[in-house]
Length: 322
Image (cartoon, rainbow, N blue to C red; front, side, top):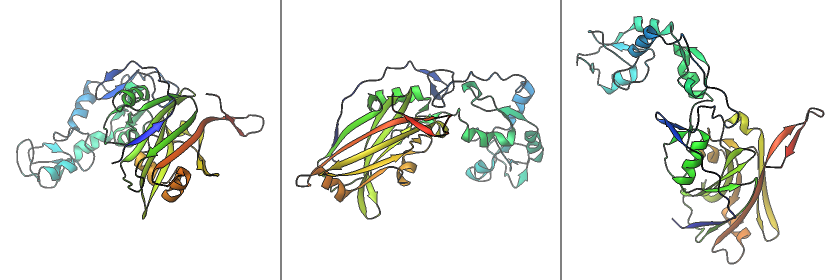
């Protein structure tokens, strides 16, 4: 892969103190939904000794995940989930007896009577759910940890926003910038060789929030393209409070893009594959680069602003100050 370079003025963001909480990484016990905080939920009289022991019974002995119908059991009463039943080749992992097709209806009924807190309650979620509704909520809970937004590798790190900012800076060596405007120059020595792994990421800090600016080259249909887009380090609802614009040009021509940043809840690939950003065809990119078209030299400028609702007019007014 060719070496990419970027020229820009930089200013570091302050390092945040990081604490570790189990398998997730968080800088505090407050809400990490991109913005305002909420005190951690205090759960009482929900999971007492009896409920806890029942909950342990609902834990699959193979994958240790909570079991949901159909819950299977062997002739000796040992249970496991339907997914693991296939994995153990229909043999009980406890007594090695053949499982057959016996349902543990009693345990399924017991599960229906349970009400449990969201597993992210210690991170601020106050919700309590029936057992069978809990899993769906947790997959969408606003208090669940965020995945690393770095696009260049399958990074499995999760945590809150302050932790991920430090992780991007310290572990992925991502450039950090303060301010709501940017002016970057992207250079590639051989633009006729486009690989899906050709990408760049820069993090911006403005309006008390963090934004990820992505720039990359990839194949779109039969031809290579370059694409730039912005992601918000927070949830989708708060991302809609912001807008951004991108512009690229040269030789008296320019392309512009204006939109709403996508949340990092949406994967980098999902945003890219939806074409939600500034897309530059290779021939146009080389035209903007000028010269003999043997080297890519693109200058991408842009800005981020916060939409402010005007109570008098009912309209949203842009706030350009960071």
